[in-house]
Image (cartoon, rainbow, N blue to C red; front, side, top):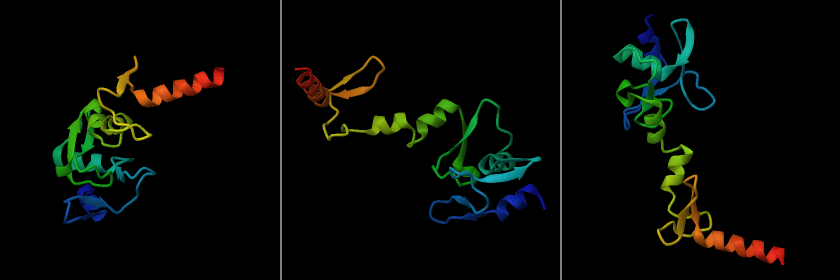
Length: 139
């Protein structure tokens, strides 16, 4: 049995999205696990190697479909680490960038927002309220 046959035996095509969903072992965070070339490797990397060729050492694979258990080579792209992080909707910087309001519901707009030296957005209304509370405690 070839590596490609073993790979196909562990995945099921999903007709709506086109993903090849991994039915074999998964890591704690949902990535496929596959024995290849004498070691356990990530299934999506193996799928890319078998269908498209080797992955350069300084690059990694990005799931265009955002499904960690997908091994469809059409859904995989070789990118740099920075590109992979910037594309992911789940990274903390991307989640914060997408926020339109602070945790208390105030709008992040030009009039109500300032940035710290570190680049963090701060709600002016919340900062003012925190300062009022601080001054009230000091008296």
